[in-house]
Length: 281
Image (cartoon, rainbow, N blue to C red; front, side, top):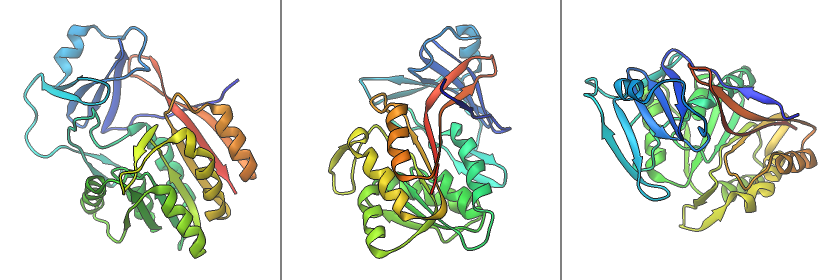
């Protein structure tokens, strides 16, 4: 039987409800409705209740992009939420995202625990807006943040600054190519975090798919870690199976913990958020 890891909400974020291929979320004092394929069940609240609560709803157009609809007046001020002593800046995008994957809170806590000793180093690949990078830096770790999208690196910098931190190393680069060069340079890390999308475009506009890169990413991560080092990897692609991740990880790591990532709504619905690997060298 597949193990399930449940990610909890916190005071500033709550998964209120899900169903009919949508999810209702509270980010601070702003509530959103966003598409969610995994919410294939009936919601716990009525449509009327959803519409009454929501400030913003994302309406998709095509397979990827769409538009945001304002359902009620937004509170004044910048859109930010707190996680402990850290601050994350949020904003609407044309791809339904708002700049944070809150189900990753379970990994943020593991990052904090793993980097408890002084002088530790973390490499964050496919680092997006940098929540994991900011968490690691707040623990005093030396952090290298790698992403192929310049705008996301700028967003991550704003999160670092809003959290009162500095000195994260920013790399605008393809994640696998950067990791391979680090290996040649002989650099090692105590923690590597990867959250690769199902497909992507590198810094030089090269296209790739995660199912073609997965084993290479896991292998190079194992070679970049100190003994006892930890790899945290999430994947949401339906083309990557849990047994495949498990097979590759056991080829290169001494201890492998693999599970599905789930989150429970306020109304008691269980929702799937992908596969989670925690592998120790």
